[in-house]
Image (cartoon, rainbow, N blue to C red):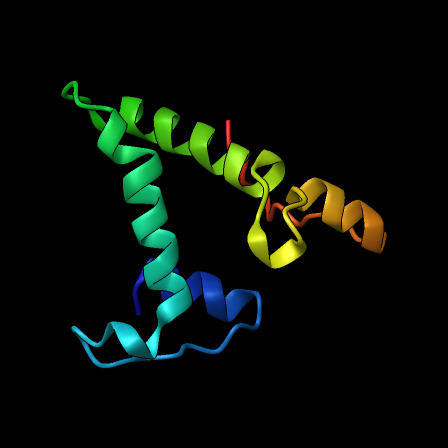
Length: 97
């Protein structure tokens, strides 16, 4: 069992396996990966080591999860949408900074 599987099992999330090279089976994941690629990774052309890349990706994830408007929530930010519902955004110990 890999670390990702161990983590998911520890928080009670069952694995969901899909066929390889079948993007239509996991459209939300494919959409997120494409957005990450277009909005974050494509703009950082300089060679980076893993630590630098993690800082760039964490900064983008923080903006994506808290400050970037999403069409699915009526173009409100996740922070605004969760405040409207009275539900905090879970971070699971991830800093995103």
